[in-house]
Length: 258
Ligand code: R5P
Image (cartoon, rainbow, N blue to C red):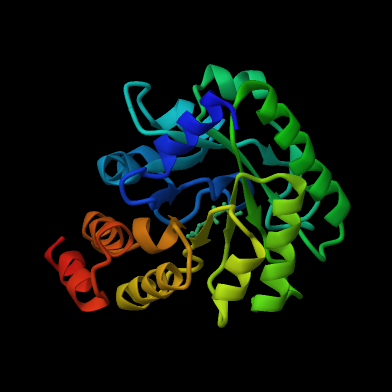
């Protein structure tokens, strides 16, 4: 791995703990003004000091995030679909040059294993890995789950392993029973979990705790943080679980204290 690639990865994954808390706020690229992100800057800017990295699109960052922000950016460079249509029909929508202009630390797209446009989405990932390699920019691959797909270790393991084989540097997937099998399928490639739909805070913390104990290196969480009634408390609580191995009860108290 070249120096730039290693340096960028170590900006995202804390070298002291080997863990990371990514804040995902890229939802608008396919679902428009998601609850909590209508005025993205108002919700997200106060959370940035507590995030290790921000997953976002180029349009959102230019609109709502001040360039003085010093956290690594994981730039969503794919899109072309909406919740009204077949989601797997995704394309790369942002050139690597624009990712570099934005000073992205990593780039990301989704892979839709089992989706109608499975092959196209795998090709997107391969293309990004090649582009990223030219400039030492790592690629985070999101295992998107279609309507028909079961979120189980068999399916998520299949999807995650394909991302690894195509060359992803970090895999983002969902927590499931027997999650350790998904992590094992990824070999040495770090795995983070998405938070998924908003659930009670304690459940989301429990899920993060379980994921870490089964080998995830962190979370790339969105709605369970920014849709919380205490978003700052919640991101602090997630950090405590991820970086300090706090128990769920202790972390939940951190959330309650805001
Ligand atoms: C999925 O394709 C996007 O990256 C989402 O924005 C992200 O996975 C959402 O995170 P969460 O499920 O925690 O809201």
